[in-house]
Image (cartoon, rainbow, N blue to C red):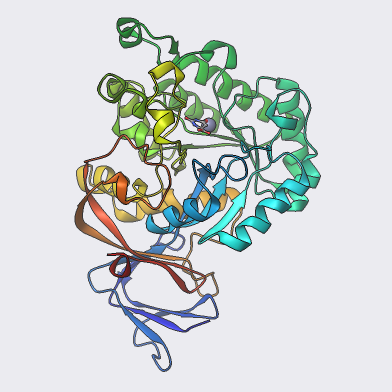
Length: 429
Ligand code: DOR
Ligand code: ZN
C-alpha cells in the first residue's frame, strides 16, 4: 500500500471542525498524520494546491442493480460512477433480482463487490421477504451477514406490523430501518406530484400526504417501541415539518434528501417528461424552499443521491410506462456545492458534513472523518471549477439525469479509497 502525501490542500473535516491549509499523510490505507511539514520520504506526493481535501462522501442510498438488472448498472459501473463523484462509500438498496432478503444474498453482494467495486460498497437487506410486505425477513441473520441497514426501498412497506417488529429487532444494532415513505394505496399508478399541474397534464398524481402519512406512521411506531427510523428521500414541506416535530419530541428519527428535491420542481415533468420521473416525485417551489430550510436547520441530516439508473430505452417510453428514478452519483457534490455553497453561501463544511460525516454516523461506518487512524478515504475537489453535465461522459451505465447541460461549479479532481487513487480527473481526460 503506497505511502502518499497530499500537499497544498485546504483540509476540511466536518468530524472535528478542521478547516485549514495543511497536509495529509496516508500510509497502510489509513490517515497516518494531519499537519504541517510532514515527512515526505518514500511518499508519492499529490499536489493539491487550490483544492479542498475532505472525507470521501458517503452515499447511503443508491441502486446498483446487481444482480438482475445489469443492463441498467453493475457494481463495477455504479462504483466507478461513485468514484467520479467523490463518493467513497455507497449503500446499495435491496431491490435487485433476486431481492437481497436472505443472508446468502448479502454474502453474494459482498463477494461481487470484492471482485468489482471501486469504492467501499455496502448493501442493505430487505425488511420483508421478496419485498412483498407479507413476511418479515430474518433481521438478525441479515445483520450478521453484513447488511448495513434494512429497507424495502423502492416499494412502500405498508404492513405496519412488519415495520414495528423490524424496528424492535433492529434495536440491539442501533441501526435504522430506512423507510421509503409513500403510502402505497395513495400513490398507486401515480406518475408525478399530485396538484394543479398533474390535473392539467392529465396524469395520475402522487400526493404529498402519501409521503407524510407513512413517515408519521413510522415515527409513531419508532416512538412506541423505542426504535430508530430513517426517512428516505424527503421531498415535501409537510414531511420536513413533521420530522422537525418528531425530532423535537425526542423520537429517534433521521432523514435524507437528494439534490433533485432542492433544485427541481414538478415543472420538469412538462419540460423533460420521463427524465424527471422519480419516486417520490419532484414537487413545488414551496416544497423546494422547505427542503432547503430543513437541510439548513438540520431537520434533514444528510444529502444522498437515490442513484437509480435505468436504460435509455426505458426512459424513452411515455410517462406512465417509464420507470422512476434518476442517476446522481456523478453530479451530487457539484449540484450541492453550486446551490448550497455558491448560491446560498453555506460554508463548505456544512455541505460536506451532510454528505459524509452525517450519513457515516447514521450507519456507524468508520468513514466521514480525517482523523489519524481513519481509513484514507478522501475526495479532492476544486470548489471553483465550472463544468457542464454531459451524461454521455458518465461512468454509470445510466444516463438518466434531468441535469444534462447544466453548468455546475465544483468539480471532483481525485478520489482516494483506502489510500489508493480510484479516480483521477487528469488521468481520465
Ligand atoms: O424513483 C425511484 N427509483 N424511487 C425508488 O424508490 C426506487 C428507484 C428505483 O429502484 O429505480
Ligand atoms: Zn425509495
